[in-house]
Image 1 (tube, rainbow, N blue to C red):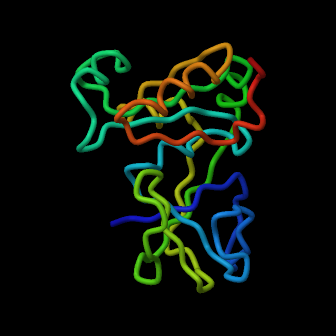
Image 2: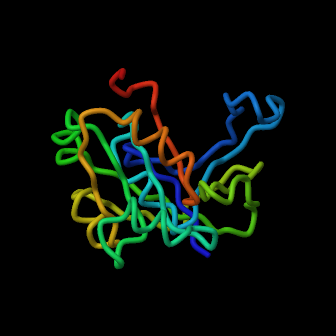
Length: 172
């Protein structure tokens, strides 16, 4: 299994555990966050870009696939708002790869793994064409005027899904 941290910062040499801001996690335990490769496409956008992401899993029904996927070969979708098109074209991301031995699963659907220890990356990959990288990974990219309608619908499906940075999304 390969684990990554995605950043717009290019020179991170050491990742220190940070106290999570999420209310459902222990505020006394600092964590280093990473994600597995299957969910990596969910983060191949500028950091603050709001997005609705979903992908097939073992529970995904034929009906949901037919309703929400554009073809039988697509298994993963990233939807962003029109206004983020240029930022996607002009953003470079740095993928920091970690040795997975100190990490444990935090959220299967989102692909999150965490470590309570500081982490030194074992590799760095540079992605300077986000659209190209998503296409290479066979991810469908959708550009929409607003994300809320899709977000509401996808949460009622059998897909594994993640809604990221929705505080920056256009209002309904």
